[in-house]
Image 1 (cartoon, rainbow, N blue to C red):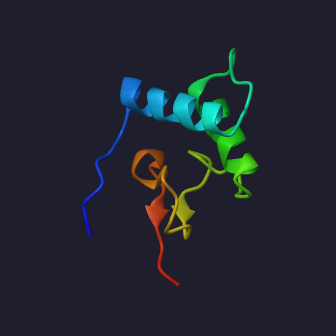
Image 2: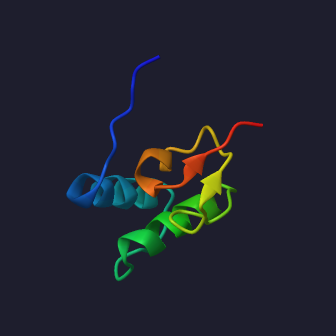
Amino acid sequence: MKKQKFKKGSPLFALARSKAKQLDIDSQNKKMTERIHAVQLKEGHQDCFRKLETCGEMDCCWQLSCGAKMKSD
């Protein structure tokens, strides 16, 4: 399995912008975190980016940048 890199700053913002565009989300005047929350909701997930201390969503593409401690079931 390829190790994913932690994204922050411009690369994280670019990923959020790209995913929002792919999902046809109008995110023109949204902050990065709001944009990521909109993407999470549109994909059918909880809008939890940088809201939780622990997370069990192992297939989340934002997990490395979120800061939540990953928990195993």
